Length: 182
Image 1 (cartoon, rainbow, N blue to C red):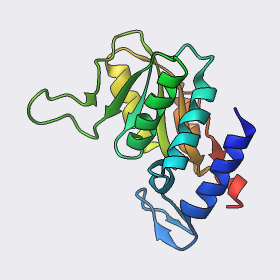
Image 2: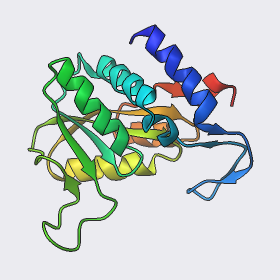
Image 3: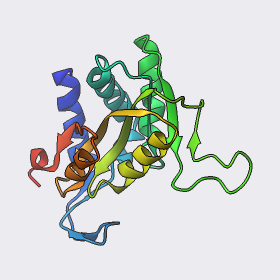
């Protein structure tokens, strides 16, 4: 992983994605900070840094596809597609809906169809309990894909990584909350 990109991303996340105040998380837990990775993944510089860091993290994993649960993964996946193309990394990209569509194709996974046996990486902006990544992992496993690993911008270190590891999913965060003094 390019150290300069990682340090630049850390500065950007620290300045723009963290709100240090009392909040109630989607898990129902109370926290003294909130992390909104979209504030950086939807920033052109942030998108560039995230995409290139993730490309570095997966370049030796023989990965066929990368995606994740909407909405935290959406901007990451979009930026990753451009960086992967520039690096001649042939990846299929996908987005997992929280629930299958109730009309039209009735699909839960959007994008070019995933095929059984494909090696995939699931991405998200944050891991707390692991719920979003777990939903994405379950959806891609249902179509017969092998989940190589899960990558999140920040692991809040609140049990989500451990829950994924119990499912046989290797977790590789770009940063942990501890790296931000949290």
